Image (cartoon, rainbow, N blue to C red; front, top):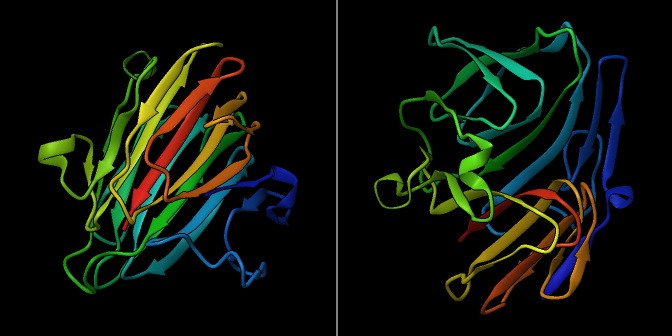
Length: 232
């Protein structure tokens, strides 16, 4: 099955500094039909105004992957980690037994991010944070693993989940294929551009919940950038 989630159908939350779309129930947005997809629990499409952001707040027992689409995000947490992650790059926070963090757009331009939450295999554990550069040229025409529960095998940043987060940039007309293992859940969202997924059209910033598909063929209708998760 391939269930297209149009951008206009997503949950919406907006205040002066944040314009957010929620692919799954989050905060004040609740849809019992969109509580998650396998171990994937949250996929937020956030636009953060310059010189603003999320003040310190706690998390626990969640793998939080931030994919920066435009601008940059600056991170600071209760472990003393600090970092600035720029467009195209990725940061991961394993909340584990508990961590407090803040994320700010300290730039003079709008920052756009995907924030993806995946439920870990086990509760607790030492919290951690890490970031990695992923040059867009390296993702041209192919899926590149950005985060994985098996980074030694797949590459990318480590997460404590039986999952992969992948990204790709495609020129118009380019196609890539992905063969998921049976019984797993895939979710795809485009950061820009339109792609066809096994013939189904996924527009800019739409989502697609996918399951029980032997082979995914992703074809760019126009130049596009996408992120794909694969979870248990």
